[in-house]
Image (cartoon, rainbow, N blue to C red; front, side, top):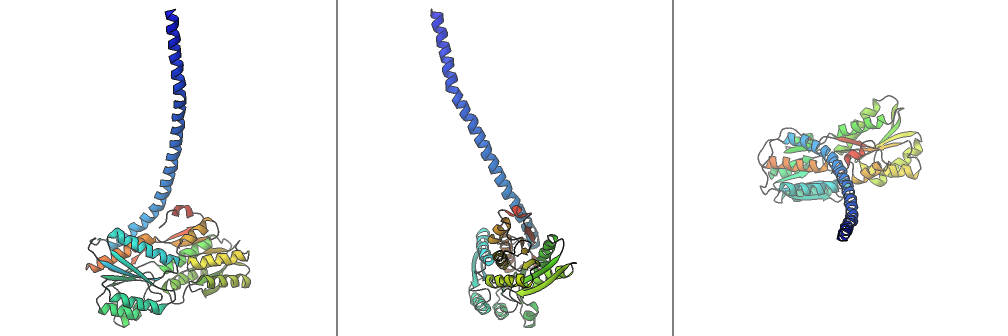
Length: 366
């Protein structure tokens, strides 16, 4: 009888262990599966970020090589920055990137601008006011090639180093008046136009009629981009330029130009706008007229709005460089000059064309 009782007790204990362990084992298996899925999602997310960052890293490497040897940091320098206007999302983003680069490098950075993109007088007055402040150097981007020359001459007289970023000052006119800039960091605007036009042509195997919407006449980036694109279009068989008009960087103006273009040229195949603001306005005009299908539209700057529009298939492409790297390089160039290092020639940022095929490679772009 005792043997029977012992056997029953043993069986009861075994059953209890099985009942107690089975749900726990199942729960562990489900948890492991959930963790594995979460880990896979995290790896994919990190890979996407790393891929985007790798392109930024490539651009940074190219720019930093041009700035070697690096200046000393944490010297307490104060750099003033004059951009074009916060009404343009590109320059608004540049302001943000200048300030973040300043924090990273330990530089006191103050960014000022003109109220609008065509207010050359206000931009000149702003630069005049910056010269009498206690900046160690000033980085400036002129609205056009000539509007800041009087203030640059005064900066030279006050021994305030001036560094030209992006749109170029008219060097011949400045030199004729005995002035100079102490450093130049820019992109090849003509090459921007060439690269965009070449990418557009790849999507126009049968050629066709194209139009260019410029920025403000006389602005270096507008003139360069137009010249580069015009050269490619004119030298491509079966491609005809039917219109080149100034859109003045203005959304409404570009919208009206695009509306008129499709009425005058119903067989239009492509529009190159010299910035994304105007390109997106052209897209909107074409969509409103139900004419977007079959017409390729490219812009410049790869703004956040342009990124979304390319992903949605509304905008066909843009051309970019990394604003975060560009501004960082500008501040480092300024430090080198402030610290008495000579910088020969211009510093150039590399470029990248973004279209519907490679847009995902630019996730996390900054």
